Amino acid sequence: MPVVPMFHANAWGLPYSCAMNGSKLVLPGPKLDGASLQQLIAEEGVTATVGVPTVWLQLLQYCQRENLSLAPLKRVIAGGSAVPESMIEQLAERGIEMRQLWGMTELSPCGTTGTPKLKHQGLAGPELNALLTKQGRPVYGVDIRIVDDAGLPLPHDGVSFGNLQVRGPWVLSQYFKRELDANHSGDGWFHTGDVVTIDPDGFMRITDRTKDVIKSGGEWISSIDLENILVGHPAVAEAAAIAVPHPKWDERPLMVVTLKPGARATREELLAYFDGKIAKWWTPNDVVFVDELPHTATGKLLKMKLREQFRDHQWPEA
Image (cartoon, rainbow, N blue to C red; front, side):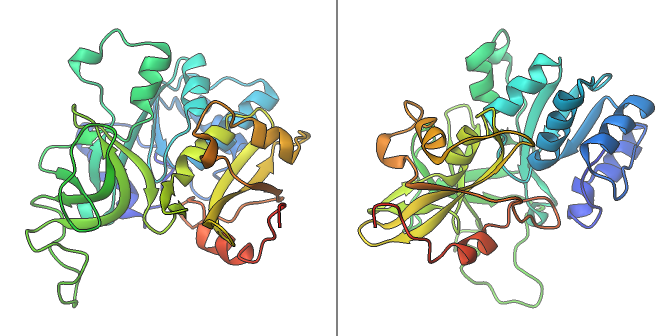
């Protein structure tokens, strides 16, 4: 069941690959709410489904609230944005495997998939979750690397993070009716706009989009890490971390949060939830609560709108 719009990279190619494999294809249409998807999974016997994490957050929250099963679902594949570890744990408790993938329309469209290697057999608990939170390793025909702002390659040690570049036979060589520009390097690599780490086994972890990274005091803070931690709080339905101008540090993280129906939480409680999970200086300076977060047509957080909305936010210490 592809919960991905057809206009979005041809639903990640699934209408074609499913037909090639003789798979039953369940199309949800316009109803992507938790109740409709849970009903389709049960009535149509869906065993595998794909979509952005926002969809699975809503589905899990609905099933928890109504005490419903997700049988016979066995595997959820997520892309479009990073999956929080709390979601992986909730699915595993239901016997469902979470796999991440990453790609772009410019890659036709898949670039990596989170398929474990033979050496990872036997992993469980936190070790397995740490692997599954990564966006995976390159598929056949795709090469990836990370470079610094000067374009110099960085080591694949799982620690160094830099700008992700991709190349391959079906990675675009230039945009239609556009001259070659900064989107392509002189040696044939495509700039994706993602900031990532790559470990020695080739597994990539996205830490941010270049336009979303928070630069505080000259150092980078990953908005994705902050969001994925906070959605693990039992009262939080969804969270967005955005950079807001700060008089001393240039930028500081602001968390924009929606709560689950009937749940309550304070600013101080949510800020304290970060303790011990990140470096102290990464801790956001403030939390604001909203009824709803804006999303793109493909279900991704629309951070540009949030940055515009909160650009004049007054920090508590000010």
